[in-house]
Image (cartoon, rainbow, N blue to C red):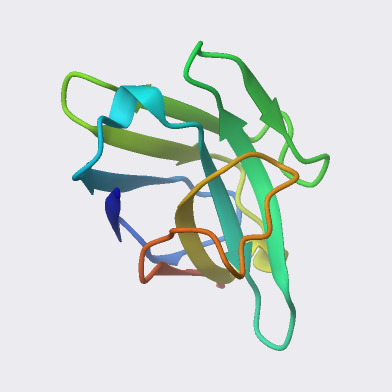
Length: 119
């Protein structure tokens, strides 16, 4: 079973960028399809992006063109490069095992990292 730890969140001004990291341990990371999801205050989990074991990617419309998912299987790392950040991107961000159809309330995911976009 994979264990996940996110980092890289923080406070950023609108239009700014952040790069989130997710360190994975345990199961063979290269065999696992991974996603990024987020939870804004008072809202449910929102799927953002997925990278399959074959390297295929997909994005939610809300982040397409602004966010990029990356993975380095040699380091057991998953990343989310976030550009052109907006106040509505404020949320706790999680990396999680699974694809866009997964139930992320039940999926294996980390404890999250807070991203706040504000001037």
